[in-house]
Image (cartoon, rainbow, N blue to C red; front, side):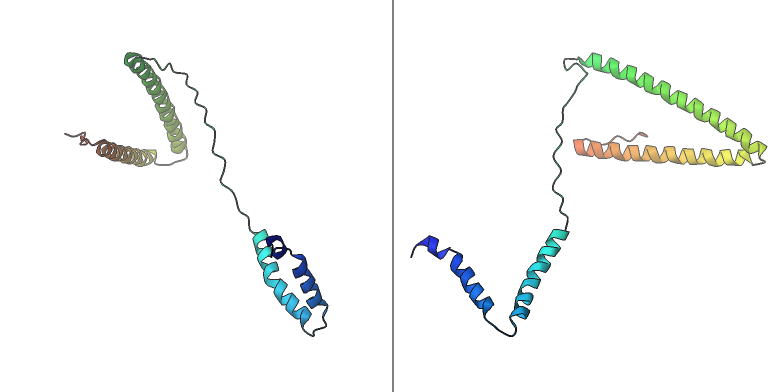
Length: 156
């Protein structure tokens, strides 16, 4: 017996057609019950949405800094950047102080106790600064532990 004759579906289809043509009282019931599970599985499978993995981004590094810079040049650049950052922070603080003065005037004109509001605002700002300093100290401690060195506390 050759392998292609065993894989030929023609004889199976012919047998199925012969069986289907035979008059049996429940043949349509059995055919329907046979088709329903496969149809339900196909319906369920076609209704589901599967998203594939997103394509990995292609990263192109653009560096505007000279890779041959010396440590002195890097330190000078860092100092200049820090000066700009300090100037911006000072300008923002001046603007915030001016806004507070304007709101104090508006609150006084509206009959509010602006001194009490200012005390509460100062307390909130101090609490925020303390929380920020605490988070910074925790992060520095974790970094120091990760690097294998002991963390130096600022009060020592």
